[in-house]
Amino acid sequence: MKSFVEKIKETIPTLVVFQHSGNKDAADVDSLIQKLREEFAGRANIERVDASDDGEYKVHYKLEEYPTYILFKESQELMRESGKKTQSELEEMIQTGL
Image 1 (cartoon, one colour):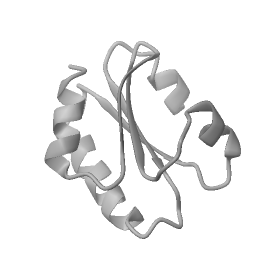
Image 2 (cartoon, rainbow, N blue to C red):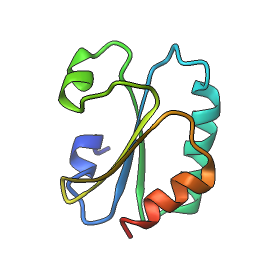
Image 3 (cartoon, rainbow, N blue to C red):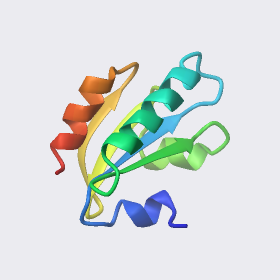
C-alpha cells in the first residue's frame, strides 16, 4: 500500500485531508472522504491523514486549521482549503486537477 507521500507524486491528483481526531466534524469528514473515493475511483486519490499526534505535518504543510484539504499532482500543491466543506465544494476542487 502506497503512503500519501508516494501518491502525491503520481500523475493523477491526490486530495489529502489533514484531520485532527479531536475535531467535532471528524465523522462527517470521514463520510465525505468515502463518498469522494467512490466517485473518483481510478481518477483521483483521496487520502486522510490524522495529524493529531504529528507536529511534523503541521509544520511541513503549514496546517493552521482542521480539516485542511490539499490537492496535489506530481508533487505540486494545486489548491488548499480549510474548514468545513461540502461534497460539491470538494468535487470542484478535485476536478481542477483532472
